[in-house]
Length: 232
Image (cartoon, rainbow, N blue to C red):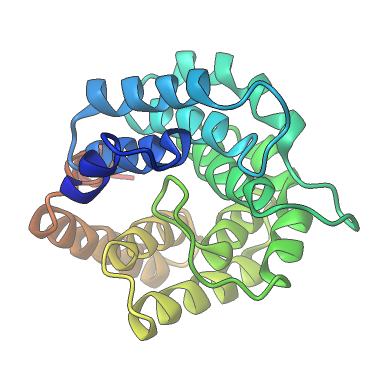
């Protein structure tokens, strides 16, 4: 966070650094500062098309959802959808960053229909070869595909993507992604028909909660606590 705050005071491209500062604030639970940074980044971006167009709009949508303001997040979704990638076309990275964030945001607000409909696009995203993302989540292409497949009811595909996302989070490594994959994977397993899967899923969420607390990922810890408290 300190690094991105320092860059905000330099001639470096502010509409690029401000979202990253906002994301750092978000993960630490500073929701007001996070949402303010992301809203300002949208205001500060160039008035014409640029390489990051759409990504920050998606970040604000997902950050708002992660902060628990689901109704407000839903009103922001129309600002994101026009910037998502189109299958079979070439895109700048921002289109996939927007997709990445959008999938997580839709999962957070519980919109399984729209989330599931994005699954084919997440497969295009995986085919780009990227394994990391600076999008709001934290997330990566495999986790986005896992969430979208789960929303679409594609159980086996979803589990394959979750397993790959978890392996990548450890192999690269991406420390904050590790408990995030565990959390979402655990949630998916907790809805399974098999009692052993449900028990495994709940244990995953509990492990994710412990790690979220260790990493001071306040909002994520709150999500995991709420899920365990609800007994689902």
